[in-house]
Image (cartoon, rainbow over all chains, first blue to last red; front, side, top):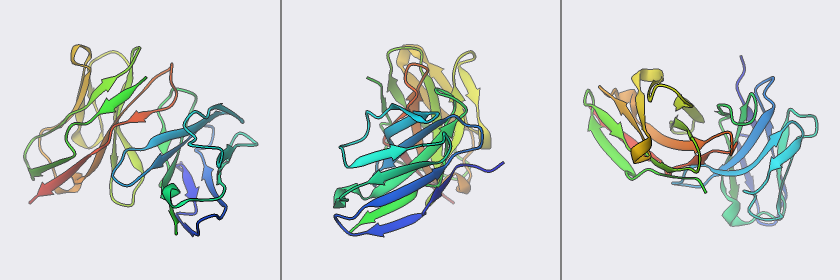
Length: 113
Length: 113
């Protein structure tokens, strides 16, 4: 079956702009996770959803970052007033339920100029 | 808090040689442990996982890992490396207490012909 998909694959924006990153999880997976991977580092947890609700958003770095999952499937990660330090690969993962094996998408590479 | 240490940032082996990648973790309960592989421009692919039971787990592509609770380790091994194994490898810890994964910094594997 289809895996996790993320769009766009690459996004270049200017400092101060707003961006949205989209994640389509594997069908039937109730848990969805966002991670951020900076150059030379392992992925770092941002937020995860169980269904429509954000069950843990402790990894969001500040209030410029926000994520939604209104219908319990597709999720959008929103970044306001982007900064150069936001440049990274944003990874999405999904799992059947909380605590189960996570399957990752290919990521969105964000570059803030 | 959970954490993962991968002591080796970069390992080089010759094709056909054996491989061991080290991973040490810190976790307050029974951990779920994972190894993922990431090729350039690709998403994270799950190699293997340990949830419970037999401490020696087999994964895809001929990889195996052994969970050693007394040493808080989950080292990845392969008896004979192929050139296509060149990639970056990430160890991660999670569990039912914490749905999110915590990743190590990664180990880059280079394979010489």
